Length: 195
View (cartoon, rainbow, N blue to C red):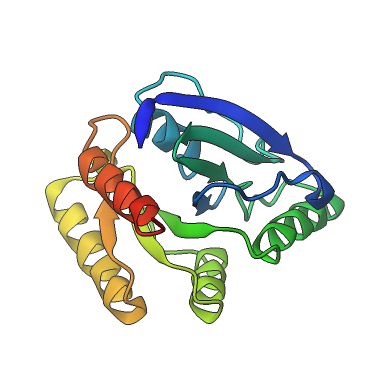
């Protein structure tokens, strides 16, 4: 996986626009404003390949990024209250359509905000991944925003969730770069498992 080769490939707003699954796919899933775009940019060592928005709910498409030997798939963030019912329904149909397509998903990176308990939507997504037997890991972002005691407490709680779901837990900060190397290794291993 050559991160230098990464380029934005395609944005799908409806399921009929989804490109064919021709490469192993690494899927990024999480609530609005959890830091998905910052995470993708940090992983790929780019400043603005994935657009970072200060306003939650802005990513309304599934965005595909082409790398050498795999694809990153950035799902729309879920759980943003100010989006209309129609828009939420379109997002749900788009994401359901993606997962229903029997695509070559080798890893789902389920992103959680380390500062808070997982939301109801987070837990629903985790249950969906478990039920459909998608390989996934838990990624706790924004670790740099916690003090030592808060971090210890939140990490212990997330470790319990990791043990319950048998999904590895990774800690990450786009600001400090914590966890970048470990996450790249996990992605590389998942992509190579298909060879």
